Length: 589
Image (tube, rainbow, N blue to C red):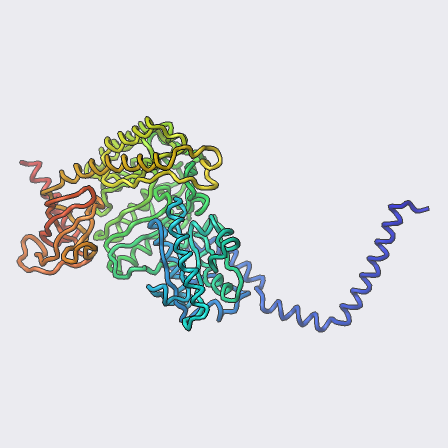
């Protein structure tokens, strides 16, 4: 006699046989129609070769060419992805990296047939490149989104057609659900590593679907995308050399919004710098979230240098990390050396570095290459060792000051700039006074000072308490700014009567009668528009234009700018030769 379980199993098997037989009969009777439908659907979808090719491309694209080709989208008709005549308007918030990312996004959309407009009212698509590093930055963007939502409603019945709104960058990754699902504020959301997907996302949004891609990548650097500059007549340009950050400072959202560090191959960077030189660019700023952590392990790049690069990464003396240091690869000093040789008349800057990545070899390259600007951004964040430990910065106050001393020993005329956070978790008045004394002691030419803003996902959000009241944070910001401005004014007063080489950028915003530019230390210099000689020994005069190197005699200053009178136009190399000759005369006297 069958048990209850065996009886149940027998019934299930019997039913399964009957169902299988019925399915075979149905399928055989409808086989031609099903086969045709399946074949037609497969023909419209991607092939096996497509997946293989794209899998390879995703991991090798960084070292190839300078194409602006975006991703191919097998499920979206080419006519929908290619948006000929559609106008896009960009609005960029935040750091220089966001400016460069906007240029990358514009390059990819231009390749897909879009046209750029400087007017949001004329645009079919408005894309906002966002910053999530502080609450205040996000607040400005939310306000702008609200304004655009109103415009979007009006455009539904307008003859200009519907408006699409897109959020790009760090805020996109952090607030994707709120942006799309809760607020229903935007049509597309694209994170920092998904700009190649923009044409597809916009095509999906036009068909009524939600366009979201915020996936972070382990290897995306956009190395083969030639950015299209937003200001084509500018004599300065940004070049991204690496993306992401591994430092995991306890207050910082960047590793969560931009992912882990990965560097572009050196050859692609050199190609981009050469192209900018050919376009007449006179100053390039190398960009990265942690720019001097650059490490290129590609085999092609190894052939570009003459030394063995298998050794371990070397940090600034006394600094440490919370992660295991990698070995091998070309380092930041190698990159600086090669980039500086592309065009001797092109100034080279870089931002934003971490103090831990300034070994002597980096300082020596800056010293020895005349076209690498003698200005270093050295973010301190706090002047108190206990707060620095809580921030997970990897150094003490004393270690930081030792690095400052070493930098000034190697680069006597260097200008130092810095970042500070006031009111971090647990910061006491005594700790705050340590920050004030550090600013006083170092004498920065520029300091960026902000109240602490708690960011979700960070170590501070999970483990620490945001216990300093906002009014106290704001007061401390004011006190740090006051000492910085006083010391900067004293520093600039010492430069009155000096002759400084200035790269002219354009007309002053405050006075159409004046020009402005920046000196080697990255300090803004304002001087009147006028005709000057092209060299002290020359009698012929010409009008000063953007892109000219001009020697300016400094006559006045504030805590933020120098003011002077232009003496003559020169070249970078000629000025350096004149300076060497002048110093030789002084030494002999």
